Image (cartoon, rainbow, N blue to C red; front, side):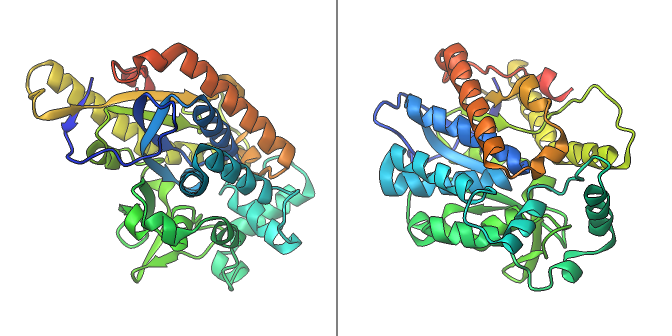
Amino acid sequence: MSGFPAPAGQFGGLAGPRAQKGVSLALQGGGAHGAFTWGVLDALIEDGRLAFEAITGASAGSMNAVVMADGWIEGGPDGARSQLEAFWRHVSLDGGLTKSQREIFDMFLGCWSLGGSSPMSTWLNAWSSAFSPYQTNPLDINPLRDVLDDLVDFDRLRASEVKLFVSATNVWTGKGRIFETRELKVEHVMASACLPTVFKAVEVDGEPYWDGGYMGNPALYPVFYAATSDDILLVQINPIERRETPRGAAEIHNRLNEITFNAGLLNELRNIDFVARLVEAGKLSRDHYKRVLMHRINGGRKIDAFTASSRLNADLGFFLELRDLGRESATAWLAENFDAVGSHATLDLTAAYS
């Protein structure tokens, strides 16, 4: 168990007709690998036994969050599943983007090197290292903005009771900022997914923002205070460990990005564990501190086997493969761990961060 000050307030999330237990969702970003999260959400919604009280996300995780929430508001659980599928199909190579939009989106899918030794890979890696988006994309073309504007009714989303938390990184201060449901617009989601090697910084209230994954992928702390349920279900798509030493320039770059994008999450897991130990030792009162019960769904060795450069793979077949892996992982997690929700954590925090 872990402790944080208990919040006030009532349930304000997404619940299907069979929902029995409330959880908060924490959705990582990771380019095309976000299609794994699509599959996890699809299976959890179909199962129907969990209610999503609050959702925190970064980068692709924030996109999954807002797309699912808007679909649910419009059409319930079935609407959420349909909306997620529409989003991922639309941004695939087989979707409705133009050739120029497709090229920009390919770069969005990760600030990752392509890997390999083909002339195209070598050229694109050198090109992205030598030039900034202020030179290569002066008009700040971002097809994802158009996709989200078409799919998501942000006015309706802001008026809802769904608790959404979208993280971004303030370029000036280097600190994370959380945007909440009542203020969400498309620019907040684009700020959360703004990779500085591809897009100009997104201005919000006169200040520039980059990808939220740099400071928290995703940020967990917003749901400590906003949710009445104790349980947080992390959907993790970035591998913590890789038991091999990168030697090529692209592999080194990719591993550095993985480490950077996991640092904030590992720090929060360490803090949760630290507070839990204080509660267990009697140094913090159980009457004044909320339990935080951590759970995690990841693809295990199957998703870890995908190279970091596969975050650039926008082929629909690859998205569907990841979706199916996400569904499989979520189904297995539910079978093994559903009974623990509301009772005890199923993620070994010490093993997760140390």
